[in-house]
Image 1 (tube, rainbow, N blue to C red):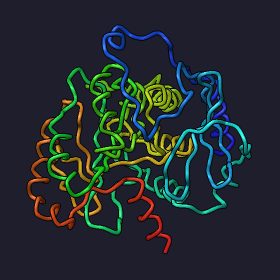
Image 2: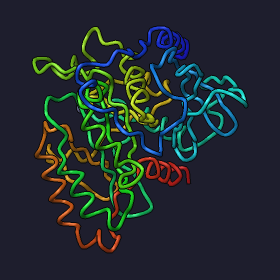
Image 3: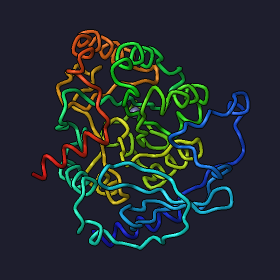
Image 4: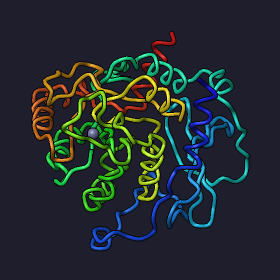
Length: 343
Ligand SMILES: [Zn+2]
């Protein structure tokens, strides 16, 4: 199995397409999004090339990816304790190549969360982490941005700024972004980036490049399980789409439709990522509990979920005002969960 994964990863490195430098007509009409302080890196301009998986260690960090941009080489690095990613020049201390056996020999919340996600991979829907054990009361809000012809549902951010920000600034939340949504909604993305690092603390979750969906197919052959899907490209091209626009991909992945099978989970985990499901897809009638990973769609396609979340905020208004109810940072909540589970 490991040999097969190594081969697949090697193919992923070779087969990954790189971004096009030609702006689309939509991009040309809208000014480029402002770069948030949190992810701005001087020198990182222009198209990304030679994007590939590079697993190894550099000091206490784990290297996940390497690429070229603006005439320099860059690394996507992960702090395996805090689950925070960042981009840095590939210079100075070299990356020491490590296979999974070596990486897994050093326990960390990252290693534990990957293993936990892989052990929760049997079901067709909702594999990976779905519920957390944070130290404080509250929940993790995840907002999916699947491809859509509609604009971003601004009500969500407006109410977070009105109700939550006075008590929690910046407000932590996660956006699961598809590459196609990024390409087709530059002005909506610019609004989010302008808030990131100041009013919002956004964890950018990979939601695949194309997020294929056919309403006529059963779940078993739909989304990433649809025949002809190149999983490596779906994952890595979405990362390139994020990096090109100034977003730093987090270590988390959300399956489109929450649909997967064990081999897909194993593949994503072998890329160093942690699949994140949900135990509270509000529009499906699931109720949020303490420690829930709440799922709503911010892409305008499922306003009921946003309605339900706004209602929940109203219900918890008093607890929010006394900080008895918090929105939790996905990275921190996963770290606390793995530390709790690890004893
Ligand atoms: Zn989706």
